[in-house]
Length: 483
Image (tube, rainbow, N blue to C red; front, side, top):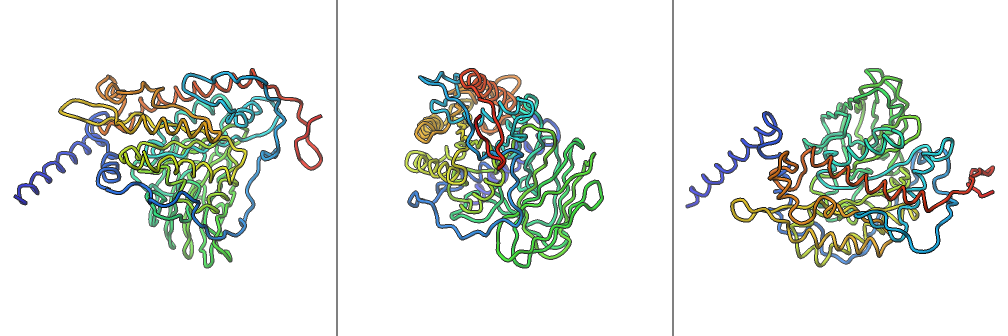
């Protein structure tokens, strides 16, 4: 009996492996996406929920020293109160799928409006998009980035990890190869630990290296994020084969740190190499002039909301958020939680509220948008595909929490078609979702991105019509004042 079971298992594994190889090397629209194996491992084999069943309180965090290099600030103080004249009376609906009755996006929209005003501040509007596997591959986020930068200006590629934790990790218009790194990330952790802005860390000894290939040579600077620590080693940064900087990570205490390295015009390759000792790197952000939008896709495979509520050291993450100074933070989880009905019904809401609270502790005035998961299909019978019952429950919880916590909410699930969408997307031509009924194809991702940006810009256009900005002046201290 055991022998027969083993033969069956081997046959199934061989079949699935063949389909994955076919998809990777022959026909990218057929076969099985490699990500399905990771999702199957993360979602189907685990029999515990994605977060520990502990009281919903902020975990204790170790003390973090001040940053060796001060956080970079926009050319005009982004933290200063913005003199925006608010409308009186009921607020109009932003769009069919974008909800923001309390004006949570006002601050973000104000920054966008300033980008469209010649000579006004700020010069850079940063958006952080935290999510799971589609974000890991820069699906949806890559298209959103392109559309927003086309309208408001391109301020750079944004944040990349040091190496690929997963083969399908990617960032539009870049290529990444690394060697010799020990990689850690915040997915599924039972306690908070020290990671970078993107929820990952890369430790390496002398010889560990990474190469980032840029599609264009327009990036003007790279900001290296690393852990300053006792006995820290040195990282050499080169551009187009020429050494640009040697970053010493030695410090008296363990603390996140940043080093800004100007890039010569036309830089297409950037190399990071540990030249001595032991280092721990987090990521690198690419920037360019002039003014515009930076859209950081911060995805981890198999991630859930507990990455933000539990997995990141609170003080370290707060320092990283303040350093990045985003105008908007997007929380885009739910797909991985959907496999655990009891977790969704009993603990998910609390974890989401905790994640929002941690962001607000670091950035009290930042705009926060909760972006619901897409539809997720499951098979019943030979050819029946239906929406997982937990998905609508997660969407409803997210919408309610957003309203309660002064966050905006985008209903991705309804916007893409609601119940049964993955069945229609999988059986339609062209196919818009992979065989796992989770991950969109590039065409499907582009559709979600277009719907999201359309609704966001509808909200922005309404904001511009209902809000007026008085003339802004700068005081001698750099603070914004009204005339």
